[in-house]
Image (cartoon, rainbow, N blue to C red):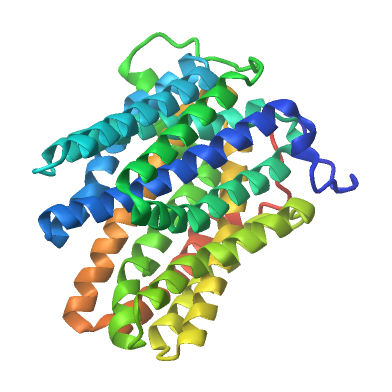
Length: 413
């Protein structure tokens, strides 16, 4: 890959000049929205069935387990098989799971076990979809348009994250069948869009099947300090600073407001992230990208501290918007660096490791936040987490000087 020309005129929609990316973007938008609808619907359905909050915790863990268990396999498949094919088949499997959920709902559920089994298969599909989808994007656009593609890809994700849960709640309110039927249609159309992508050029791995080949992603990340620094920075910042799991406590006990406040709080980070991702599409980072990422992780910690100290609804919402905006810039730089600095034949395996790190940081971060909140109170727990995120940014700037010194987002041959 060649370096991105910093003097080139910015085209806000450059990624959409490529048909392959348009189809990919549509598939991502529809599939993520479908996933969000399913997530909300399953949560309501399980809780209505069991009235046990512990079962809600199982929903996330069951879906994350396949990605952790198969981290050595999912990335290797993305590198050895056509990523478009893997992505399309994974979305089809997600749609099939939703269709079975719909059938079970129509028949009537008396136990959550069939739903948990389907969620495991759904998580299996997502485990293969993640590395294939993340690494495919670099095969669809030229290097010069890749940061723009990352920004618009993030826009699709954030728009789905904001609108999907709202749509899921409204549709489930009409009928569970309506919610699941809509999600199934979304997955079907997403799969069609994915298979319609012209076959991209992909440097498939030619390594012999061996444990060394399967561990290629880990070995490359450990060797390439810029990639290691970018991935581990997100892991520890979210592990220490994540506070989303405690938002129901803020809405009910800290702010003394109703469910509508929880909806506003949950949407606020997505609003900040969506705004920034649209801005980044037309204003790509030209200089000091590594330093900007580290500073934004620090800002993530600052806004987390403000959230923990706030007892005013509007201030809490603004803190969450700022938190989401800072995190989006960090995500943009990290994803661009990881994809452009990683050889094409290794992208799937590196993306699989990155996916597990992100999932682990989210799951363990929620556990940390809940445990600390139970021990010292929700406000102090969140404030301490924000201080931790700021500390991570400072320590990583010292541990990974290569990351701090990255100037432009560029690729390599």
